[in-house]
Image (cartoon, rainbow, N blue to C red; front, side, top):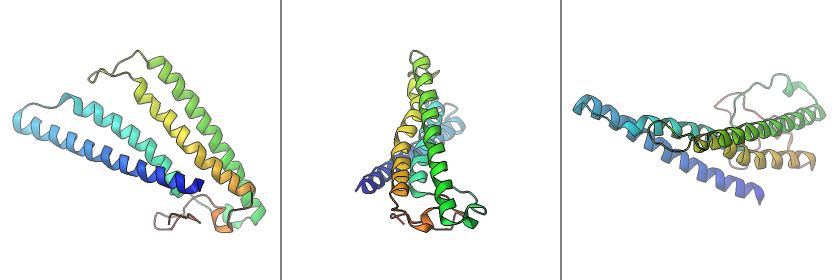
Length: 178
């Protein structure tokens, strides 16, 4: 049930990323047309596109985490016995949770520091820009915690004990979405 909820919010994040990408394409293409065709431009498009790109990157990392789509190498882990794979996965999940905490803490500090600072063109608080790190950490942590709980409860199959894909063409290990 929890995995279904996570899959649903990841689908929503994917649609949000599609919207962000479409907005970026329209703004940048429109800006190029206006600069070359009419010798003017949309001042807002460059800065807003940059902001959307940062947000899209962080949201995409959450979706990729859920789908186990991050690339890596499993040459050592795949040679370990099942217990070794479980220990390595538990250690990696623990370390990723710690990194989520560090990202959240650092982003929170940046939000506080930049709350009264405004962006050059949009004149919007820079805190919204840095909040992307906080949102990433808050959305990634439940996925990592669920995987850690599944590992500790013995509810992971052996093919799920390797948390990465060797190639982009390889299906995600044990992902119920695939």
